[in-house]
Image (cartoon, rainbow, N blue to C red; front, side, top):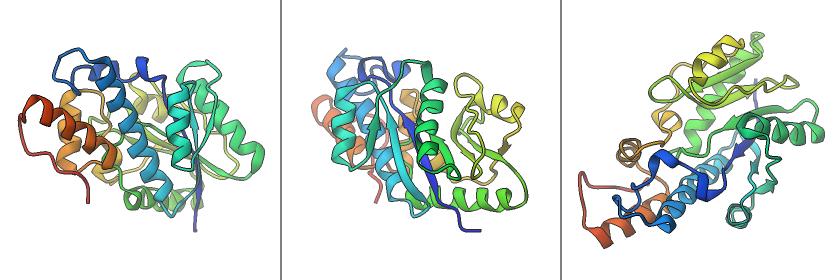
Length: 232
């Protein structure tokens, strides 16, 4: 079964995004601009990787931040305004938009903090989901690296997305009937909520925009810790 999916990617307004990551872009100096640049870079690298995947038909970003809309537009990605219904409401809104265009589409929700994501790893996950969908499974999800949260949720063609993101969403999605996708690649599981997560993503190799923010930080403040290498 060949499957192509339409993905919804929610991005918070940058001043409120990634609060647990504050200080990672400037090592605690308190530069709000540096933090927002990092939050935007994470989202840009995630969306660019998703859009590059052969299994992804379209990407729809949901955000109320004009800066996000401008940056994503430069990537050629459509942006819809966040209706202000929290994360799961934003995802349902995006899924509704996509379904209005194709009632039988396979819909997915992808978190916006996966800077090490590679399109080929996303393709592998979609291919695994296709096999499960062919056997009658309706929804699948990819747990994050600690196996507590969720980085990707996919619904079979015509099936309601039914997102349960936030907090221990892996158990919430399992409780809602979605099956975990085993064997997903690290790049798809390594979301970035803390400075330690960012270091782990850098170990895997991050995309162009995140690498540029980290390079600027290290140039201005001096290198610390292991060598950071961007993704090839």
